[in-house]
Image (cartoon, rainbow, N blue to C red; front, side, top):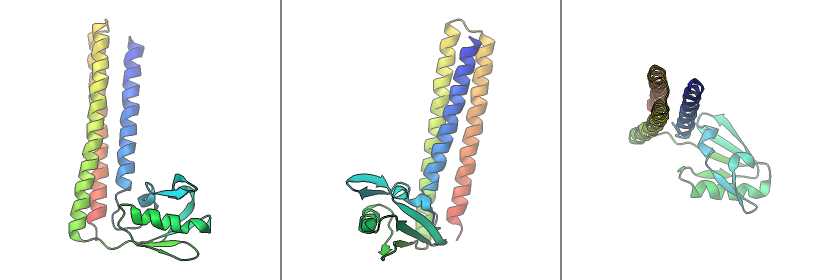
Length: 187
């Protein structure tokens, strides 16, 4: 039974780490007024009939804090990249030439900053909900083991460890949120 308890604990810990990583990735996609290649991660380009991530068909560089430069490996897909950017929800106006595409990131208004902070709070809350759901699943598995004859003390200790891990990961998500909020609100 002890092996099963350890199995559920390690599975829960692993799932919580994945939820934290997912939240971190989602937060990196929220632009904070600075140019970042992560802003384009969800952008798909029609590459010979296949929706392909822009990072797989072009180099993305950051020449300065407010500019992204996309240099496709094949010149003939510049127009496809421009079309994908215009059709996306990025709200950016691409400027293309023979070499590539330049994206100027406009400075953010105070209202836009507040909207982004709300988006950050929603994303971090989703991460917390995922972690609490994992805690619930692990605790249910532990209670099943208790009914199957596991030692009550071992199950109680495992539940305490799950709660400690939950608190730790929620704290890490809170840290991510405060860093991202500070980044957004910095002018």
